[in-house]
Image (cartoon, rainbow, N blue to C red; front, side, top):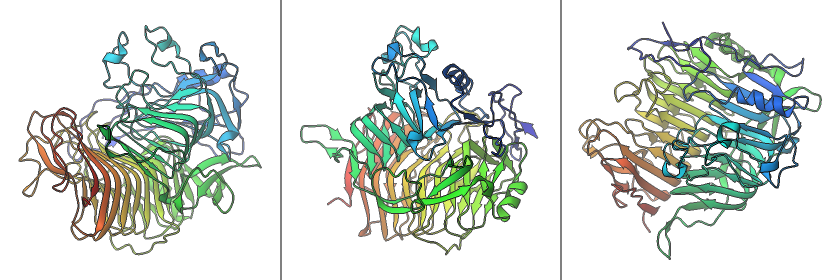
Length: 632
């Protein structure tokens, strides 16, 4: 057995795994974590509860110990703020004068959440912010790359922020401080897998760097921004069921569904020249907000699990009985890294327990098997699962109502056929009012180490909701090469009436998303083609050049997709082409809106946007659009 965890916190050893080898990762503790209430279960060393007895200096110092994890660190962190007010609002009109504010970066594998029943029950005077990489501090505007392109795997939820942002000491002394923000503004300059949910920003929110650095985000849901939401240089962004004062910015594919204050749709050619990038839907067809931990009136912890709903709009922060169910923490098994195995967790699931996966990496010699309807599996702090024997990481039986939220799955070797399977192949039990829901579920093939999986997520059940998925065959990190981190498909949907809201699928080697079920719906799709096909001959779908990223099977009669972007960067100095980024059957019930192809860099490119429609995306940041398909 080869170990990938260094004895030093946050370090990852370089280890390329030969076929048949397994990455084993023993758990380690994180200094400084603590429990708050004596009646709370033991969440282990990677979960910290902060309350109003903590001074601002203590809060900032503690958060500063968490935010320096490396991109592929194996450490994980969950921070909870108990209900209360943190920091002083005295400097809100002039951040340069602000004292006593909560002001910290949010780093890799760090989740910060409030424990109130409402976001406003936890008020932060200050900023919990994410900043881009500044490669040229002497002239930051001259170095847009990498910026925020790798600001992944961090989150914030269930709290309110009165934005007061100041540069931290390492930035304040630079000739051009990048962390400056305007009064009443906070920066959350992220890309994929960095959701903000159930958050109230009492001011402005900017989601790109001060100097316009590249960014490839992102996801905002069930949140309120009372001022401006500025997306700036973000290539794409999806905002769902939220409220914004005003909105500004964006590059290629900005999608809004069920958002109060959203801009009007302008996707396509503009009357005065150029092209619009915004697509707005009045409502979201199917929603179920993420489950969350909160402090009940009696002081105990409970998990609120919202009900599913249809045609929704705006925020929904209700915790009333008609909005969802509240489950006491005693009904959950609290799993711990290093202590728990697939066998021990499955035994608790079989007893009827829900499961909380505390932050850490769980090595699984068999899948976690969710067999009971309405079971909740809630990951904290980017809890990560990795199979060790070519097995799946998690399977859901033929039952309705299961909710899986907040987990990351890392492929391993030997190769797995599938990493997450929702329903067996013959699944037939489903409830439209109570869909199986995957929320903030992220899959990686490579990155921390070499891994292989044919399919990352397979959905066989009907009436499933996929809400914010990022399936990623790594384009950088360890174990990354055409024949090392092999993965054919990111998401394969065989069930009927499946809805995806915020679907990110990138770099897989064949069709990245395959939709075989009827009446599927996707709202917002972001995908980069694989960077590394060694030649055109090595990347052919029969006699078709390359593999379309988004593929609706030829037999499908009804399918709807809105806001799709497929991007090309072939980096092997080969003239590799893909015939089209999107491939669908020509059936009356198959309709698509707001599609774009983009040439990012490298060689080759995309010859058509969808089927044989749309101009080429080849060279010079070409970004052709197709407003609707079939073309009216």
